[in-house]
Length: 521
Ligand code: NAD
Image (cartoon, rainbow, N blue to C red; front, top):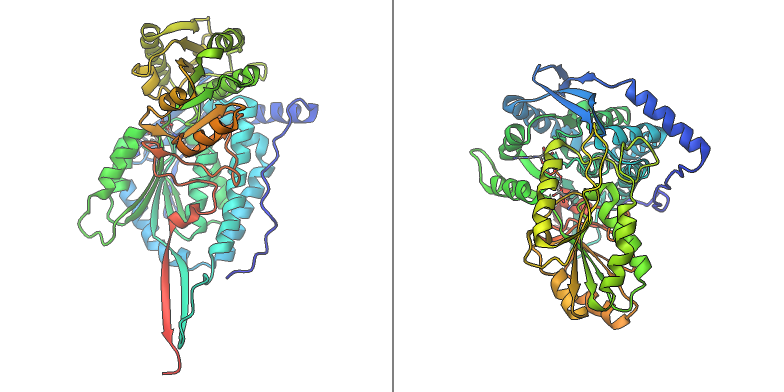
């Protein structure tokens, strides 16, 4: 086994923006990033720079007249070329000593740390994150690099196996091949970095197709990977449409695995496409698919209602409800239902909505006009399915803003109770008792995160046993999973439960080879 030489993993601390130095640093970074607005980003495939002329433009969702970046889009031919180039380089990269790959992952973490405010600023301006949300995203990206470097140290070299008499018995983990990495826009750095670095540090070559909403953040991270020493040919960033480029990458016979995070429908499609054996394909493709959520917080009869209200607010409206872990259902015991709503409504109404580069705002914009329209349609549906408690407040012009919305008395059959909205919309439902609350919480095709506010140990025990989610929290919010402490991934239609940031995650990117040698013959 490789000797552990790295220090114990620690989560990256968050910058405190109430400190004048940090505030100033962030303001400067916003200015520096704005100065790069409108820049063009060509493709780099197999060491060659390619400008296709088919351009994808990303805008600032807080101010849609600002163009953040212009990206040359790949087509299906270039997607094929990217997979073939990654396949050709795989033998060399997979044989690069693990220590070198680990060193590069740690160097990527160091470079992200050096450029932290700059990355924060890209996230504020391209993804519409508020300062603290951006800071949490970049910190998590650093955590993934540090954590997976340490995981790889444990997995490199021979693993402990039973030694049979007269034999030398060994087992080693080896890389899989070409990995197609497809992240979402909502953690445009953390998830992209986690999936990509996990694949690379284990010795796979990667074709990364970023979300079309946040391609500039991906391009900036590609710079970090190059500067950290990852060879150009180990890693290709391929901007392009999900439908055209995505399908080609997934279907290619030389693609060995697909690591996807995004919506249920796209995840299921990828799973289906990848399952079909292509001409010349000599393996079963592995699919890691982390998908949507319809996450619930249960508020029990004896819960501290004030604490529950604050946790529901943070979970439902942090990053405008655009987290897979966001609380979109509050399920509240009848005994505290009215008190909960009375406390929640004025606080939700008071949340300030506006440009995410202004640190005075609690909520920024949603990601796109398409997202805004979808969310508004769900709000209209919700008004018919329940009682609008909060919503329809005026929001600023110029960006994709949506007011925080709370709809009470929502039945479990309602669309806004069952479907992932991915915006600042909270459905509140009354439960007869705790057993009913658990039943309602589990009445979902998803099973990603959930939380319970209760002071009743027996109720918490029952929730631990039967609240069917991959990430369960007691007496705290249901967002904000920390690398190392809360390995992340959901059940049922929330995905393959890969547990990103957990001790087993890298095994998804490896295969084990057993070698037995007869001795003394
Ligand atoms: P999405 O499914 O629309 O897109 C995800 C990625 O897939 C993007 O890069 C997109 O370009 C790509 N894509 C689209 N069509 C494709 C195709 N046919 N083939 C290959 N790739 C294709 O999701 P999104 O809007 O980017 O992200 C939001 C969704 O992600 C929500 O459902 C959210 O719950 C989920 N999510 C889940 C987790 C998790 O860990 N479970 C984390 C974050 C986000």
